[in-house]
Image (tube, rainbow, N blue to C red; front, side, top):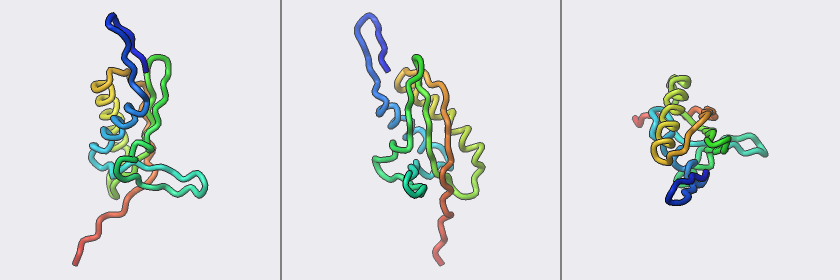
Length: 120
């Protein structure tokens, strides 16, 4: 996305927006991590470390961006509530940190993680 003003041009790369959106999503309660689906066998992989942005797709559309998030959630949580909370948080954080207007934020729950087993 490019922004022109009196002093020059500012360009925000889609990869930067994806990283910001990913961090915002990971800060939401109930979101265990970002996911990516292997096209060959359809297996969903939970992304670790710095590769979490691969679970985010940013699409520029007429002066704004649309964001698609693929997430894994904790077992036993209300998925609708988590999805709505994540949409709102990602939209707010991306707009505040980049100044880029956000259109649609679509959240796909690709996996539910197993509950942590207590040690006996």
